[in-house]
Length: 247
Ligand code: AP5
Ligand code: MG
Image: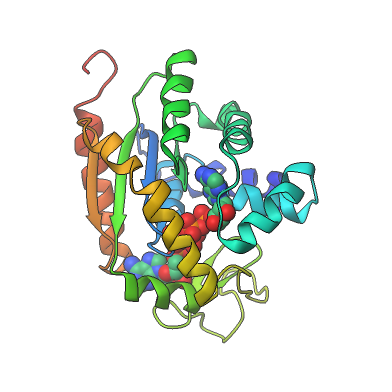
C-alpha cells in the first residue's frame, strides 16, 4: 500500500457521525501479534484520526525500494529494530501532515527508550495541544505465536486470522476481494527474535510511561470488540483528566 492509499484509508469516510471526542496522541504498545494494528484500525475508524504504524510505513518504503526501505529490509526480516534516527525522522515527517491535528494512533512506536525521549521532546518542540495517552496491550506468549502464524493480510491493510478471524472465503479479503498474504517475518524463528527484542528494548518503555498518569494496561486476550471497548473507556477517562489547561 502506498502512502497516498494509506492516507486515503484514514479519511473521514470512517468517521462516526456526531463524534466530538478529540483523542489526541494515543500510543499502542505491546509485543508482536498482541493486536496493535487490529485495535489501531478500529480506533482510527471510530475517532477519525490516522493510524500511524511504523511497521506499515517501513514495509511501504521497502515495497517502493527507497533508501530507507533498503536499509530496513534485512533488519526487519531478522526481527531486529531499524535504527532510531531513521524511524524518528520517518515519524516526524508523518506527524507533520495535517490529518494528525486532532490526534493519531501510534502503533509500534516508540519501541526504544531513545524513541520515547525523542517523542517527548518532539511534542514539547511542536507545542502539542495534548499529552500522549498510552495503552499497553498484554497477551500470553503462546497465544501471540498462534496469532502471528495464523495472521493473513490484505494488501489494502485489512487484518485476518485463520483461527480467530477467518475471511468468509478462504484466502480472500471480505472487503475488497484481494488475495490474502502472509508477512515474511511471521515465522516461528523471526517471532522468537522479535520477542527477544521486545523484552530487551521495548519492555523498558512501559515503565517510562507507567510513571505518568496517562497510562493503562488492557487485557488483549478478550474478543476484538471487547478489547476495543476497554481501550475506548480507558482512553476517554485518561483524556478527560488531561484536557488542555487541566493537566
Ligand atoms: P510491526 O509491523 O510493528 O510488527 P510487530 O510489533 O511485531 O507487531 P505485529 O504487526 O506483528 O502485531 P500487532 O500487534 O499489530 O497485531 P495484529 O493486530 O496484526 O514491526 C515489524 C518490524 O518493523 C519490526 O520487527 C522492526 O524491524 C520494524 N519496526 C517497526 N516499528 C519500529 C520502530 N518503532 N523502531 C524500529 N524498528 C521498527 O494482530 C495479530 C493477529 O492476531 C492477527 O491475525 C489478528 O487478526 C489477530 N488478533 C488481533 N486481535 C485479536 C483478538 N482480540 N483475538 C483474537 N485474535 C486477534
Ligand atoms: Mg501490526
